[in-house]
Length: 195
Image 1 (cartoon, helix red, strand yellow):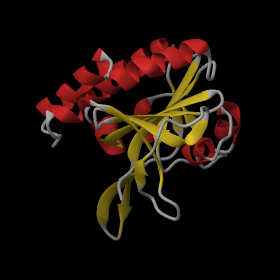
Image 2 (cartoon, rainbow, N blue to C red):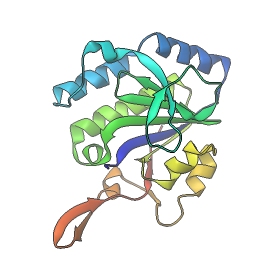
Image 3 (cartoon, rainbow, N blue to C red):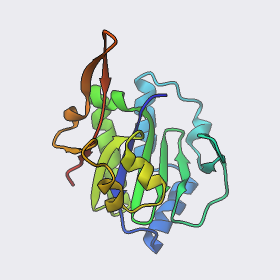
Image 4 (cartoon, rainbow, N blue to C red):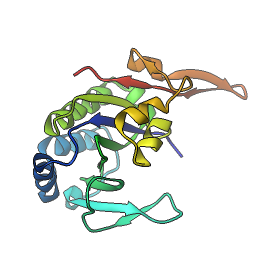
């Protein structure tokens, strides 16, 4: 199982404005997500037909890592995902918007063109949802797990501990290492995106 890109954005929570933005996204993906999807297709990512540009809610299957379609949940709900254009998933926590991309973490860390596209998408989500802070990490981070278990932005970051520190540059998140005489990589920590 590969590590995937995730971002946690501190936002005002579920307000009338947030619900309006969610309703707009449910009717169709915002232009920045359509653009990101097209960018990934141009880079050779295997995405399906344009019919997948729809937005839909998904929830966890009990005792499984899989999800299944659900009706729109009562928000906030850090277990439900709003899937958009088959590449972006939004999770609405109490004060945190989770952004999960169907994109391997190492692609973000090593491909500068992908990195710039992802950062632009994050910036647009920060603006769209009134974000005031943002961190980037992988879905293997304890920060992500804590958020998905319903904790706040600050609680999630506090759980990182010394094993998953804040780093000053994205490049510090890519750690080259040797495992059984094979060069490989690892990643720990998170990067706080300047707003």
